[in-house]
Image 1: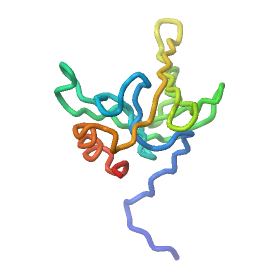
Image 2 (image 1 turned 90 degrees about the vertical axis):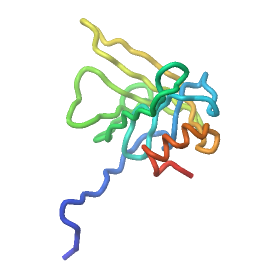
Image 3 (image 1 turned 180 degrees about the vertical axis):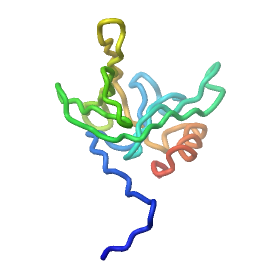
Image 4 (image 1 turned 30 degrees about the vertical axis):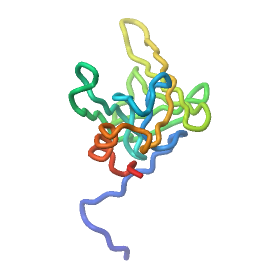
Length: 143
């Protein structure tokens, strides 16, 4: 009989085709960025400073990924909670430390699609301010 601690469940293994880390839009510089996305192995979402010049925050909007599945054109779709509605969040690798993030949002009678080419920033390349935000909100990524 295996022993276990009641009430503690193992974290689900999330299969995304990108490496865990801090991701930002490819036009940003890792040393000065104040907005990006975090994939910590089980959660995805935005981590950012806001206000004039990113002077306020940080704010973290990280959600547990409950399921992933391959979809068209090499993308992997992420599902959060039990919701799997008309909108979607997808990611596709574009090489080492590069990816395409696609969001489909319902609007009237259609789905509006937006793509963001992303790069992954090494923790040590981030500003001390972003490093502090990662330490607080995704400590497993600190290396």
